[in-house]
Image 1 (tube, rainbow, N blue to C red):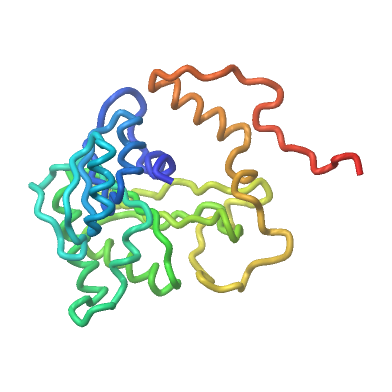
Image 2: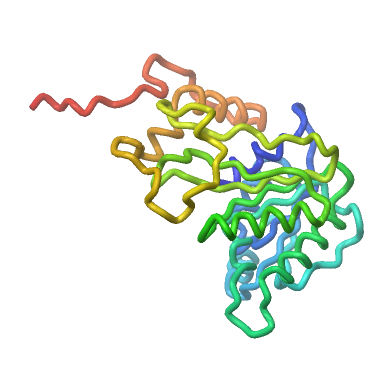
Length: 251
């Protein structure tokens, strides 16, 4: 999912390291992907145990203990971009009397907007509980000065569906990237946030295995090209690259 987040950041083509804030960095798994992509990063997380794992694994980025809902105080314009994997939905929890979701989201997005450079970008993969939660998160980000929206990959798959909030601090005409679609889906089915967390709209035959939906030939070729640009050796394509396996086993 971190690789997908990097794609959605839409950095300009060509070499160049970006300075990225990893929000909810955990044990450093997403940070490792950022490092492999040639970027420098700083991460923070609310879990001491997860950060200790990151330190034991000698991750390349700097990590610190912090609660995103309390805001953060990096210098204005410090980061080129920010990513977050499976974290920001926790800002909506009201598990304590002082944890007011809207207030925590406002503090978070205000801090993020300040620490990103002009034209900076942010991508958050998250698991919403409802359409109302998506609306609250998105509208709060827009209220704090961001442009952007929600990208839903594989919107009709029960397993592969992923939500990404893509934000930009630049021009107001910024448009979110195109989502990933299964082969039978059309672009018109891709951008809705209706029926989140419900079974409405799921029809027989719409479920599709994540591996089949994601790893088609074009996706594999694009990933191999990215690895080659990073200096890694990749095997040559063949007629079997990305080919679906037949379910016919002779009986």
